[in-house]
Image (cartoon, rainbow, N blue to C red; front, side, top):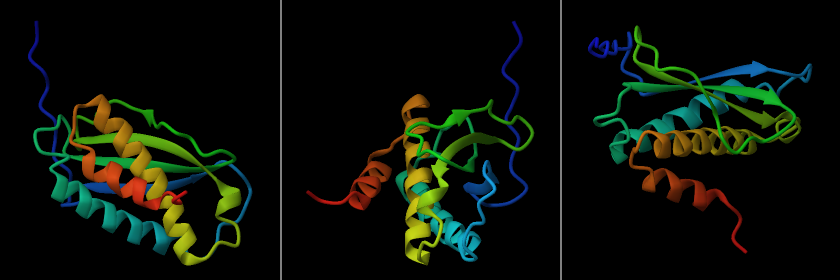
Length: 143
């Protein structure tokens, strides 16, 4: 039996990476990158403060936001990257919610998708997700 291969470290100090992949021909609003950047920074702070990565088998998480036609409720997983130490996830968001949206609405789309993906992965890898779940719950409209 061979020992587990050590997981590499990222070439930076980020704990969360977001990228976007278009599945449609729709043109996203001009502020989409800025909104994604702000959402990432806010959620990255939650990850650090909650201890999400403490003792995890990965050093950071990358999430590919797929601009499609549906809002997925669970992410797609890839293997933990042994070279860079990240857990690659992907989740689809409904592009219709982004077309003509305000900056705050765009940020909300990124935050919701990112939190959903991180919470799902947190349950899979036994990570503390209470802070992330509370943040997601606070985004939901109260009834």
